[in-house]
Length: 202
Image: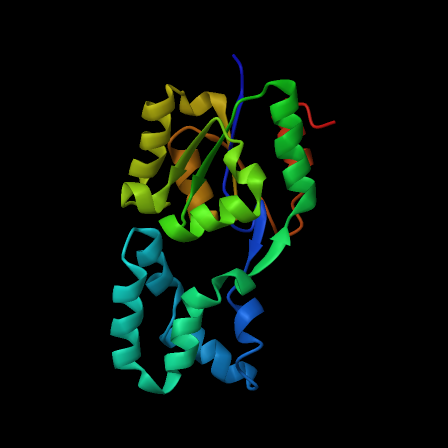
């Protein structure tokens, strides 16, 4: 059996947090958190990851919350300010797997246009042997369908794949489908996780 590696992108390879932008736009942290939990919420952003058009989402939200028009429009126009660079140790792991001939894939919840921009900004995001981007498929993790798309499109078996993600829901779903998993974050070291699955990390 030859193991394959399946990466999440956001907060596994690239640091993303809307607060990186909105700390610059709100002087009151409590108001910023209210905005992110009531206006441009995680669920709202997930719909763009599912393929909803940004203009549709923004115009609808501006109509509902006109006092926050500048902040709402900034979610897309200043999206790159939400990115705080790469997670270097994990990118080195990705590059090391590629150098050793270990097949590497990605399943990512990402809007189609912003993912294309991220690939231009961070060229290693073009280096996968296969990518499943939620916006292109109109389905997001943790829906099992997006995992089945990966397996069927690239002829993989779940049990031969080590899936790394920062979301407990995504990890739980992948594990239920038979993937080996590494829940990255909360002090969990990715290299140790891969080594425990028998993958070369150095």
